[in-house]
Amino acid sequence: MNVYVTIGFIVGIFAYAGLQLMLHLTQDKREPCILESRVPFLDSAIGIMNHRANYLAKLKAQYKASIHTIRMPFQRLYIVHTPHLIQIIQNKANASTFVPNLLDFGMMFSGLKKESKVTLAGAFGLNGNAFTKSVHKHLLPGASLLATTSNAVEKLCASLPNNLDNSSTQGLLELVRHELTMALTGAVYGPENPYNDSKIEASWYDFVPGINHLLYSPFPNLTARAALRARDRVIGAFQKYFETGGHHYAMAMIPEMYEANISHGLASDEAAKMEMATSLAMLSSGSNTAFWLLYQIFSDCSALHTIRQELLEVSTKEETSGGPQCRVLSLNLIRDECPTMSAMLNETLRYHSSVINIKQVQHDTTFANQYLLKKDAIVMIPGQSIHHEKDIWGPSADYFDHLRFLDPASRRNLSSTSAFRPFGAGASMCPGRHFSMNVICSLVAMIVLQYNIMPSDGKWRAPTKCNADLWNAMPKPDRDLAVRIVKKVESEDVQWRFVWAEEV
Ligand code: HEM
Image 1: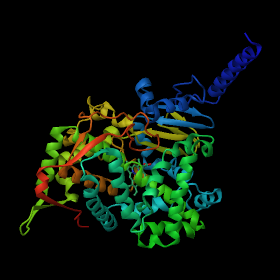
Image 2: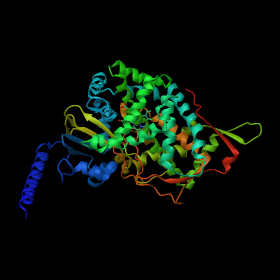
Image 3: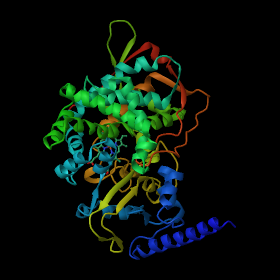
Image 4: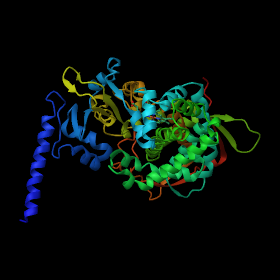
């Protein structure tokens, strides 16, 4: 054997043994166990590369542990899989021990300068940032949510006929993504919405794949050059938006966030970068949710028929003088008066969700009277483990059942964040969930009532979601579905009017 190969081999063996020793010497016996240590400190990186968003659920299925440790270079992760342990973490008394750290995530990919990060951390500490505070204030149920939802619904009503009425073959995901992007951002950013420019919309979606590089790559500037150039274009558009006062015509949340960041000492062009975090929260999970919901409805004839019937029954006839029949649907009624559609939405969230809640341990603590959790470690709660737990959801937990939430016992689980957590839990539970669900339900109802969707190859086949991003609460399908969308024959003679007419 070549002498260099022999030396390399021996060095490799020593390095491996050294790393194994280091791993086990630095792991306290009282900490949750390590499940895999074939490649010390790198098992999880390899596992995530291979299994992406499914990695943690795969570990649970394989080892059946309720909690375990993952070691990465300079970081320990504690993965929690079972409801009783999750409840302890979510217990109010433990709020100062386990703290959400989404703030860091937003800052990591927004392109902020170091000094701006320091300014924001000084201003907001562990209490979120101007963005999270404002969303909690403006998008929880109330007049502002109502106005913003109505605005988004108007945008959908205006754009849908233009984009769907041509019976050509289109990608389902691409189609709903465009509709939701324009409706959500249009309602939030107002008439000067930077995403009105199709180049900026395209640049946003060119940037998104770069987030993984910013999170995991040691050299994102080399490995994600095109994505980072796309981010510069989006940031540039937001800088212009604020410079020219576009935010004065937006919903109150946007100028409020901007002014808060400026008042804490951020330069105007840096404050504009925070809109990358707003855009990500707004645009990352919604279109994937709408995609899966449409897939589940249209691929099941009986569910489609029932949902159409329910929607029709809550709509009312509007008197017209001649011409086609006119029907009005108050989309806000769907949640309470269309049980199958609501059940289908909740099952879509339960079954497909890839959410992982992340908290940081603030000090060494003994958890559940048993485990030592070390300061600065990250606690991860994979929603998949809970959403597919047979003790909670019964033997059919691993299957999609659009009738599941018609059953009172399953419906009760909706209000337990130890059972149903597509939007997280506790004080940091997604404050955009009402807005997002309102608009997604509206889009889906408008499509279901007016169009037929058929896969262009004639057979519905669920795309896989093996490459879904670990950070996204709803998984992107690995491939888009080519579909043909045609106006329903019956709806040729009906003029539909859709409104969001809720009273506060
Ligand atoms: C289907 C759509 C959405 C899903 C599945 C989703 C999911 C989530 C999840 C899982 C979290 C983390 C919660 C936790 O740590 O406990 C979160 C946080 C957040 N989401 Fe959403 N989200 C969606 C849409 C939106 C929209 C449209 C907005 C804004 C307009 C938004 C704004 C936020 C904000 C500001 C936070 C941070 C809250 C905090 O730290 O206090 N989300 N979201």
